[in-house]
Length: 71
Image (cartoon, rainbow, N blue to C red):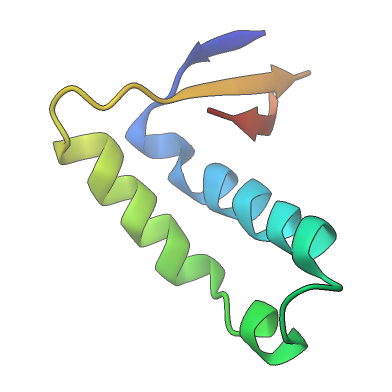
């Protein structure tokens, strides 16, 4: 199911983002950079973006209630 993202989705979106970067850029970027990506930091950014950015359109893809992607 695809639906508009909510501020409460911020941690799940951040987790997908970090996991995606690790799998996509794992051989292209330094491991230290990827390891520095902190879930709490990214979740806070997503929470702020989703709560306060007028005109920002973000959608999530869910599989059995679990967010597995975003756009």
